[in-house]
Image (tube, rainbow, N blue to C red; front, side, top):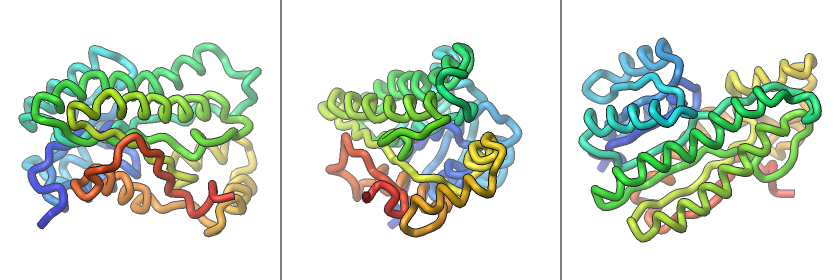
Length: 253
């Protein structure tokens, strides 16, 4: 039996590489998806690939509450309800010391990475509860488990997601809603290219990151998507409030 058979799924940040792989897997496993991002071209391309019988999308800024309400309404209209929510959208910001970060840069990053997570939970949880519960996965990072110089706002936001997730898991358990976080190490994506190039020494920075990972490589997008997928399946029915790393051993020491 397909593990997402008839599941109604919402994915934010859906035009990104990890989320696109996740959407493909969900559809392959019998689910129907509603995709959310600010990148309309990316959403159109992915929706066409998945097929209009399986996917639809809403262009939305997750840091805006009215936009969040809109994508939740659209998803409920398309799908009839929401069983699975991948609260995934995030940005990396700029690589610079905390003392050089502007208020505008700080607010934008926190707005997407942390406020956007909270708004998604706030408006999706009641819809899930109406249908007897569901599963949510919030995307954090190994940056939520330690510090990284030059990435202070990003690190702070990813720490915040873990606190948000744990609180949400405790509040939502009585409504049969499970909430967990996935914390990837560097993944071979556009975001990591941006972080690497932000230092001006892309190749050297990539080698430094790889040297911190016992498996000596970045994660593939599929490897992160597979863990996110698993946490949303019925196989993970007793897992909630957990911080799950996919990091090639990076946080083992």
